[in-house]
Image 1: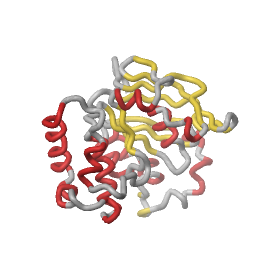
Image 2 (image 1 turned 135 degrees about the vertical axis):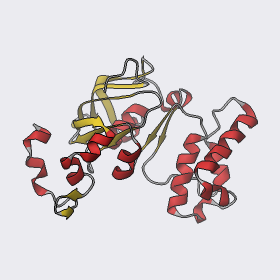
Image 3 (image 1 turned 60 degrees about the horizontal axis):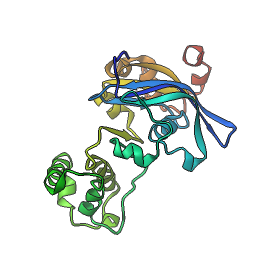
Length: 238
């Protein structure tokens, strides 16, 4: 992807856990402002580690970026704290449904606006926007989060991120089909490396992507786990 001044520029980063385990091996990607970029790959490919590197949440997992650079609007951000990044508009929705169980749905949503400085009117307008995106949340706004469904809690987690009026949302645990349907561009990770990238609609039509990531082949649906010969294909990992 060619972008003169991307919102996010990840350039050749390596990530090591516990000082010895190399997880990311020179990952580069760009996110232009206003674009949706999908990061795809199998379990253990490095997707979550990449997102945690951007939002600087690696330290809690005993991980660190040891090479390369990460820039937000041209500013190096590796040394910033997660709180610094939130203040700059970078919000991560973690894998799994992270809601405050004892709070109502609306109370959960409002916790996402704690960094806002534009007053009640601005927060209220964003809340109504979130309810427009997720009508189910408006129906359950007074329900305690602990007693809502898993899907409702996931909507709540995304809605809470939107309440911060972010410049970038890092959404973990994407559905591949949905991600490619709505994304502008995509990167495919395997064993800590980017093995393919391109326009999302082109990736969605690629036969290898359809077979290994969308579960489709000329013989019909096929699971990624059953594709035993996949790792031996030199054109992917060579």
